[in-house]
Image 1 (cartoon, rainbow, N blue to C red):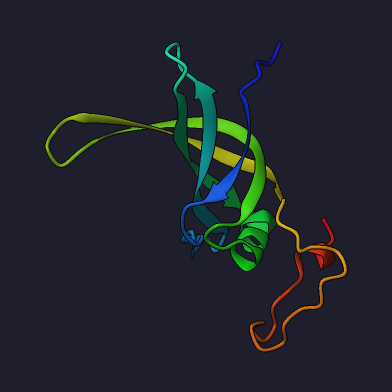
Image 2 (image 1 turned 60 degrees about the vertical axis):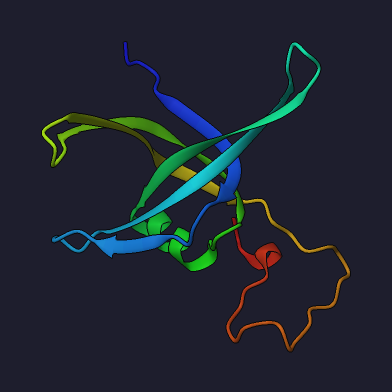
Length: 133
C-alpha cells in the first residue's frame, strides 16, 4: 500500500518566481510562499506567526507559475513534500523541506466591474480572471 505525503497551502509569494532549466532542458520554477496564522495567546494577546515554504514546480506548471505569478500573489499550492539533506560549507549537515507542486491556483482577483486603468497596466498583462485554470 502506498503512503500519502501531501501538502496544501494558501499564502502569498515572498518574491518573484525564478525559472531555470535542467541540463536536459526541463523547466523548474522556484518560489517561496508565506502562510500566516493568527491566534490569541493564553494571556489574551493577539499574535500572528508566519511560516515560509519553498515551492518547486516542474514542466508546464513551472512555465505557468513563472508567467503569471509575482511577488505578493495570493496562491493555493498543492503537492508532495520532499526532504533534501546536504553538507554545508561549515561541514554541518543541513536539511530542507520543500513542496514539489502538482497544482497551483491563483487566488488574486480584481473587483468585478472595475475598469482596468490603462495607464497602470503593463503591455501584455493578463487579467487573473482570464487564465483558464
